[in-house]
Image 1 (cartoon, helix red, strand yellow):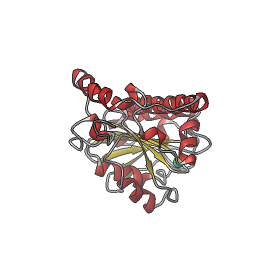
Image 2 (cartoon, protein in one colour):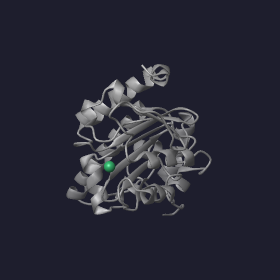
Image 3 (cartoon, protein in one colour):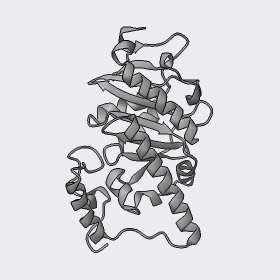
Image 4 (cartoon, helix red, strand yellow):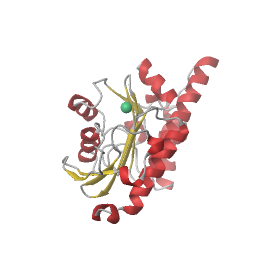
Length: 243
Ligand SMILES: [Zn+2]
């Protein structure tokens, strides 16, 4: 076993477990999706390219530095082509420790529709824990342009739709938390579809959003988005009193 594999054994095991859970949930198909975990200030564990998430084992996980150097690469494995995008997120968001990019069917439907509906405050828990699900412009997968497109919104929330591609979730904590948040986002997307079928999609009022700030404080939760970027949920959702 490589010395870095040994050092980060527990975290690599969690990468494997979350990869399998993504596959089990149907959030990735074929070789799709990629996940990463920051284990040290600038050391990132990341999934390899060209392998189904359900087949990933301990010896498939790659280790890179935040500036793109390969620190450990298992035989016959290469870090995901989306590594520059993950690294960029960790540079722009020093408060983030785990990133999941996947293609959950309902969220990906919203990404294909380029719908902005999930940017609205629709359900209390996602308002508090995810922030608005913001869109990232379509760019070619695995390109530097995609990594740059991420820059425009990455500080403003912890949940994103990649237009005509899929979803991305950031967690302050770990991958376990990131996949829970991804499930929350996918569940909300399903509920919004049901609401659309039944009639109107109603938003939570500005007054109620202001009240939710108290819940955040009581639970000692950070506001969604980059630390110190916003001072209230009204700012996070870009709404003004009277809206
Ligand atoms: Zn993808």
